[in-house]
Image (cartoon, rainbow, N blue to C red; front, side, top):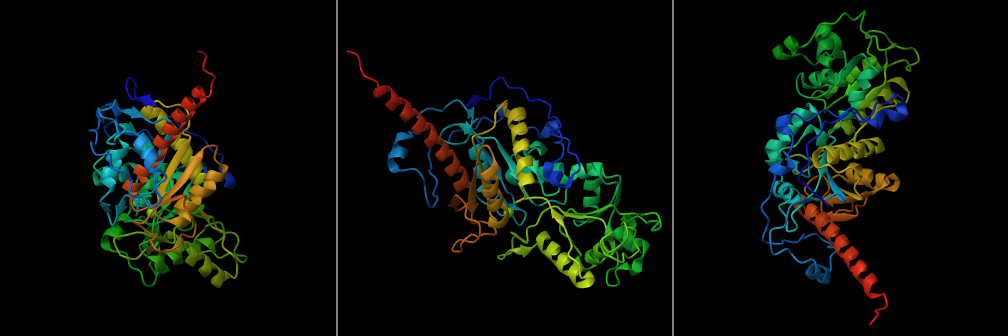
Length: 436
Ligand SMILES: [Mg+2]
C-alpha cells in the first residue's frame, strides 16, 4: 500500500489519440484536467476511523468466522493508507443514485472507501455510467452534491464521453436527445464544429414534424439552416430523446438521404450517414417502482422502423457498457486517476465493478475479465434494475443488497488476501528445518 504523504497532484495528460477506424470507435477521448476546486486532495481527506468493525451483510460472505477473528480490527487509529492493489468502479443510476437522490447507503459507502473503515484504507475509484445529457464537469458537480463528496471529471465516464474523439472525424453532425440545448453545448465542448439539433430542422421546415411544434423557448434557441448547404455527416444520440416521434422522423429522413442532405431520398437506402448511440440500455432505474425504457429502446425502435420503411437492415453503433472499448477506456482512465491522485504507477490486481444491470454492468465486467490482464470482479446490487428473487441474465461473481455491502465485501476480500499471504509466508518459514 502507498501512503498518501508527500504526493503532489500532477497534470492529467491526453491518454490516447485514436484513428477513427470503426474498430477503434471505443478507444476513448482525451481526459480533461479536473478543475482545481474539484480536485480531491488525499491529504485533506483524513477520515475518522469507525470504531465498529461492521461486517458486510452480503448474502454469501467469503470470510469464515476464523478468518474474521484473524483479521483483527485495529485497536488504535491506523495511518491512512491508499490501496495500490485494488480499485473500484461504480455504475451510478440504481447503484448510488435513484430518482435524482442518493441511495441511503451511498454516502456512507463513499466515506468508507475514502478511509472511514476499520483498516484506514483509502481505495481509488472511478464512475462509469451509461447516462449523460450534461458535460462531465456538470455531472460531477451534481454527483458531488448528491454524495456529499467531491467527484472529479478525471474519475468519471458517461455514455457519450467516448464521442469526444469523433469530433476529429465529423464536422457537421445531428445531435439528438437531452434537455433543451444541453447536448448541443456538450457536443460543441467536445469540438464538433457544426452541431445541428432536431429543433434547427423543425424551425427551418415546420412541416418536418406535423405533430410537433416548437415552444417559444425552443424556437428562439434553434438556428435556421440553409438546407441546400447542410450535409449531415453523422448522427449522434447523446441522451434520451424527449420526443420520440419527432426525433425518429428526423433521424429517418437523414438515414434515407443521399449523403446526409436533408430533402433528398436515396434510391438504395444505403447512402445515409452513420448513427451512433451513447449506450444501449433498454431499461434503466428511476424513482418509479418499475424500470423505465431508455435509449436502447429507441435504438430497437429505429432499427425496426427502418426495416419496415426501407426493407433494409439498419446498422447502428452503440458506446457505453457492455462494450469492451468502454471498459478499455475505463482501464486507462483508472490508471491515470490512480497515478494523478494517488501516485500509483502500476495497474491494480483487481477492479471491483458494482452495477445494477446484468445486461450492461455485469455482462461487460465478466466479458472484460476474460480479456483483461487483471481481474475484473462483478458485483450486482438489488437497488436498481435487477430485482431480488429473479435470476440475472448474466450472473455476477457476487450479489449483495446495496452499495455499502458491495464496498465492504471488496475491502474484506482484499484484507483476506493480505491475511492469506502473510499466513503463507509464516507457514513457509516454519516448514524450514530448525537448527538447534
Ligand atoms: Mg444502473
